[in-house]
Image 1 (cartoon, rainbow, N blue to C red):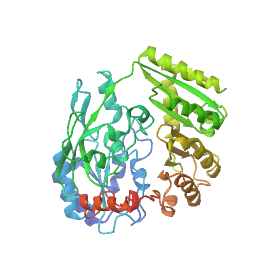
Image 2: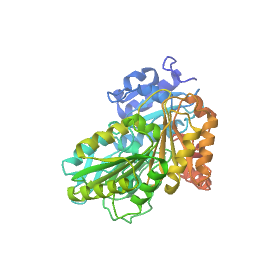
Image 3: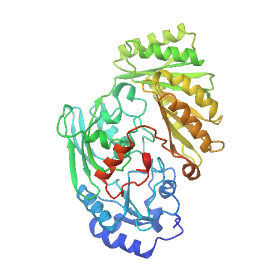
Image 4: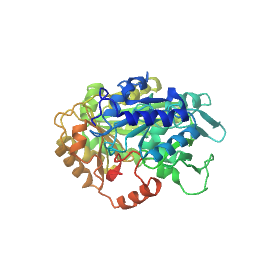
Length: 463
């Protein structure tokens, strides 16, 4: 069956959905596919079920949505799906549903979308221990507002920060520019409670920063794209909110920007974010020419001012035009950049790549030469992780993806497609993984999800 809101699901599936799940969660928490409009949320800039349609392969049957309100209900739903032989897609607010590979499910295994938005409680905030425990349906924006009362924050800046839930951020390992100072989201997860594919509840880690209890399943589940288990609760490490922040903005030719970047990273300065912007992105942001370099400093006011001034002087020595954006201006600068990178559109293509940090500028130059002219690139200078955003699929063919991937792989890197129209995802391996860990990953998948019911085919190697 082609996924289409105008085409009702088979009566037998709809009947099973209602008869088996309503007793678990109640009638208001079960929505069949033909009532898809009822699951739209005020935060969604595109229809929720339209995003589902871009996430699944044609002829995949979607049974509908179920919204458990407690970990016990989540466990019962997972056990019921296993008993029925249904596949499961976990979802928070749906902001990243269209990322990754197309979900595929056999005709006798319809896809059940398990919405986590009711699992959104603050369980515990240990202010003195700098930890917080929350359910994964909580939005990042709501968590940050709570932490702000204690002058703390979770140091990540993922895609769609106003919509993204903690569970979705962990599932996709979506950290953002702040990883320069604070590490990735996997470094912030201290403990998890999760539900296995058979409905059994398990725990790993704890609620303290120093923890050696059991296997480090937190890092295994982070970035697993919902293919191993359903995380229900997580304990995270938080940090004091910086007193102030300033950003040094430099623009200029590639070689000078590369030199400024290496000088910064090899110095005693401690930026919280360092981003390299392609000429197309710089031109779109402020009309300047050449590459851009954003170096953000945060902390005590005197330290921030000193570090920003010293790095601006480095830029002047390299004859790079630059300025210091103070706290008020720089907040809007980063917000504008975030909004620019994550603009939604039916034809928008977003790719992620990674190369050795020292090769970032050289790789950007090579990628710009092979990508459509409207493509915009940004790279986290300290890690070599980057994004490509192209507002239109025109000219962004599967052969372009393969050429870009070859450029990154020649430097022991990777190039994958996050969001793209279905036709592109059908014609190219969106992950293109060429490492030697695939066999191990498949064995882990079989151990956690032996029947391949969780987010089937969404992840690397059709896992």
